[in-house]
Every structure is written in structure tokens, then in C-alpha cells.
Image 1: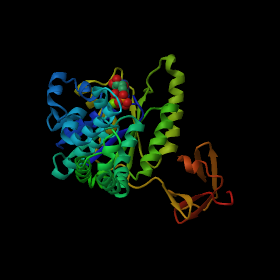
Image 2: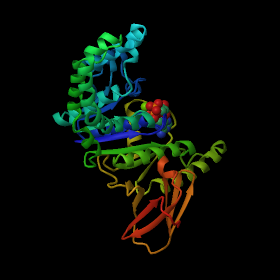
Image 3: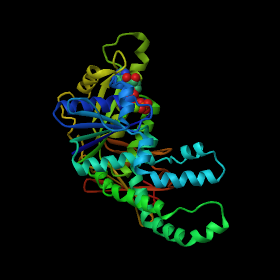
Image 4: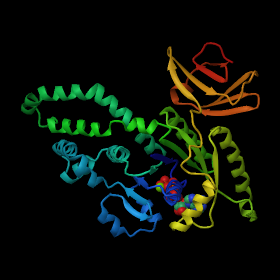
Length: 397
Ligand SMILES: Nc1ncnc2c1ncn2[C@@H]1O[C@H](COP(=O)(O)OP(=O)(O)OP(=O)(O)O)[C@@H](O)[C@H]1O
Ligand SMILES: [Mg+2]
């Protein structure tokens, strides 16, 4: 079983690359499903599917080729299946606050419900070994980060809050009923949450197990896109998900001679070089801008050819953590493995929320999380082939 996430900023080519990869793995004889949370249904559009067929299928996988399925989550179906009692309570609660019933029902679709529904599918498919490959066409960065944080957040909620809330509600219910109009959740609500949580159990391990799951970030050679890719890179690292490729999409090919594109081509080259500095040792996969948009099976196949060439898309192109950030003795520490043993001095430069690390010819840009970026002092030490950077240390380097 292999799971590959395709994530990145809005519009960079996630759906195209995810679909292209799925076509390739299915052609290799691997039973593949491409899943998406996209409400715009671009996955079905890209495969030129009949909308009626999809609507009838109600969020279940649709076969689009030999050994290839696509699945777009239909939240209303999922509410019927997974969220019944939870949604019912939330709509009732919102309805008692004076909201119109239909609006209350709509608002009671909480952010996160769709993501959890998708996680439930992943867990089930892995347990039932239903597919060989699961490909995830993620939502734009922010939302996909929320997606990967759900298992941890839920675990925390269930461990720390849930039991207390359930007990409290049990004792407070009869009193609250007399005093307030607002209903407290009934036991079916809690039972439904618990049941949901049980079905999610283990999904966090699947997502952080590098032998199963890897993340590929799609980016474009542009300033703002790259900045967001750096941010996604940092967060996926913090969640300990294994990033094994950066797909640099929409490069204007070298043989374009039109002077109109001259400046753009030059700046693209600079950004590609920067991307190597930002993301190394994770390999970069360059992909040219096509003459036209990427639509339909043949065009996607040719996109897959550009990305992977002779490589097997199921390989793990990089294993390990490019860096690790942790908190010890009240201090944030960042550890980075150096490509070879170096005796030179470490040079650290901070430019707003970015740390630039130089050791001889080795150079890395690390985008820092907010708490760390605010640290006043930084010091570094080398040990074996590792560089340790301490934040809030007292002497500067
Ligand atoms: N290499 C490429 N050459 C030309 N067009 C491309 C290329 N990659 C993607 N496109 C086109 O760019 C548009 C956006 O691509 P796509 O839908 O895959 O992006 P996305 O990241 O999934 O967007 P969203 O964030 O909206 O989901 C599409 O029209 C697609 O055909
Ligand atoms: Mg998309």
C-alpha cells in the first residue's frame, strides 16, 4: 500500500499532477484511487467525466480507466453516513439560537467534517487493502495543513476533554433543561463522536509512516508561490510527514525564443535555483509549461512522462527528515544533517522569518515557525554530521 499526497498553493497544478501520477501507477498495474475534497470537482472535469454519472454515484469511487478510480467526497452523503447524531445536535443548537432551520443545518457542517470523512476512507481502504495506491489531491496549502493536523487534534480532544465533557453533560443535563433553552448534547452525540474516533484510530500512524505515505509539493518558479511552498514544507516537516519530491511545474521551455517571455524565463531560472537551496536534499522534478491546459487522458499521460521519465512514481525519492525542530529545556532546537563532515565555521543569518545557514559551500534556507522566528538569540554547534541550532541561547554565532 502506498499513499501519496499532492499539496501546494492554489492553482499550481495539484489536480493535474495527482491525476497524471494516478494514470501512471494504474498503467503499471497498481489498483489506484485518486481522492479529493475539492467542491469544484476539478478531478472529474480533468478526466472529462459526465456530471450526471458522478452525481448519481454520490461520492463513491468512479472507475475512469483500467485499475483507476477517482473519488470526490460528497459531504451530504457523509453526513448521512457518519455524522448523523453529531450534525443533528449541532443544527438543533444553532436552530435554538434563532437561526433559520436550513441555515442552521448548513452551518452545522463544521470545518473538518469533510476532512475527517476522507481520513475515514483512507483508514478503511488501508485496513481492507482495497487499493494498492491512494493518491490525494489536496486542497490548497492552508486547508491541507488543517487536514493533517486533525488526527493529532482529535487525539488530544478525546484524551483531555471528551470524557470530562461527557460526564459534565450527563450531570448538568437535567438542571440545564430547566434553566436554559439551549439543549446540552445527549449521549448519542457523545457516542457518535466516540465511534467516529474509533474508526479513525491508526490513521495518524499511516500518515507519518514513510514506508507508506509521502508528500509531494507542487510549486511554480515564482516568488509568492515559492514562499508558500516553503511554509508548507516547514509544516509537513513539523508533522513528521515524509516529503519526497518537489514538483516545479510550469517552466517555460528553453526553446521558446519569443522576446515577450525573455524576462520571465530569466526570473524562472533564478527561482528554480532558489528552490534547490530551499528544499535540498529533497529532489526537484522540473515540468514544462504545456502549450495548452492539461486536459484529458493523453495530455495527463504526457505530463506524467515529464514528471517521472523512467522513474517509478511509487518510489520514495527521499527518506528522512530534512530538519527536525523540537523543544528541550524550554529552548527550541533545530537539527539538520549535513551532507558531509565539515570543519568550517557555521554562518547564520536571519532575514525576517527565514534562517540562512551556511557552512562552507553548504547553504540552506529554513523558514521558521513563528515562535522560533521571534527568538532573540541563536547559537549553533556541530556534532558528527549534524548541525544543532539553539534558539534563545545567550551567545550569538
Ligand atoms: N504544466 C502545465 N502546463 C500548462 N498548463 C498547466 C500545467 N499544469 C497545470 N496546468 C493548468 O493549470 C490549471 C490549474 O491546474 P490544476 O487544476 O491542476 O491546479 P490545482 O493546484 O489543482 O488548482 P486548485 O488549487 O484550484 O485545486 C489547469 O487549467 C491546468 O490544466
Ligand atoms: Mg485542484
